[in-house]
Length: 396
Ligand SMILES: [Zn+2]
Image 1 (spheres, rainbow, N blue to C red):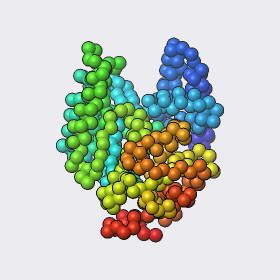
Image 2 (image 1 turned 90 degrees about the horizontal axis):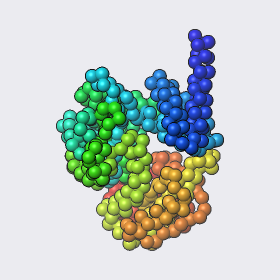
Image 3 (image 1 turned 45 degrees about the vertical axis):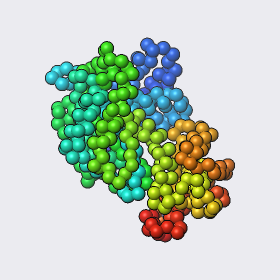
Image 4 (image 1 turned 90 degrees about the vertical axis):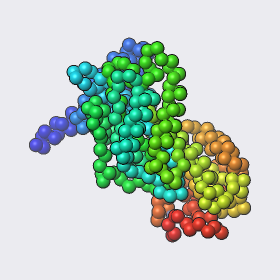
């Protein structure tokens, strides 16, 4: 027994090695022909690892490439994402391409944001909107019956692969995919956050999956199709989102949709914070000021984000709302510029930019991030004074 485990462990690390080597060769390739060969070999190995539950080999390879070869890292990460979220299946003996989609929405509320089951009627309605607006003729679509928060979604390549396989199977068979809500984490409560519906689309191999890819259809039909989908699918979700303001984003392949939602959540959170202060405390943007500073975790060396503290215009010490602004690959200056533009667009013109770096701190009691104030300290948010509203945050 022990001997077998040893052999199998050695083989796994050999596979991680092979993944790293193939990814390096792919990153050096200068022609489409050579690209395709390396990609095919990588895809075969990635699919094998995912299907057999050894996705940790992929993480090991990525960890190693992150230190030594950023281009090979990107190439391998792209392919691993694509393998985890797509599949080839058969329907009546005919090969099909299939893909896991995520449909993100951005929402904010002064109450708790929902993360909950979707009724059969709502699943049917979303399926109809996907089929009607987006899917090519001859494809099949399935929607999972849950509105997920980000921390309830599958995370590792292996978890994404497992969910994709199940939902793709449901689409191929025309059955429902039931999510066991008890197996999901309780979402972290935020003023503004993302929510996701998961879906799968299956269609004949190498043919159009989406309507705008069909022969004879204007490729720009995509723009109108996505707009119509967002409006109508958004309206269908309304009953689930009472008391929330929300915006549907476009459905996309799972990993790309999550990235896009993370990116758009930054400015949406800022708008939400300012709108919330007006709604709950009658504080207008023109009477507010903002402070922007970088927060970093020196130990990890990689954790780095900008945080924005919102303070009353006449108070350089308290912070009444805060927004975390992760860089997501942007340069620091670009992110600072984006924040200032977003603040200005929302009516806040007084902005203090601290050059000093703050430690990446959270409150010991409630876990909330600390935010910068104009005076140059990193502080806990406080409920605005002189307000009738009872503080929603825990008192400590
Ligand atoms: Zn706290």
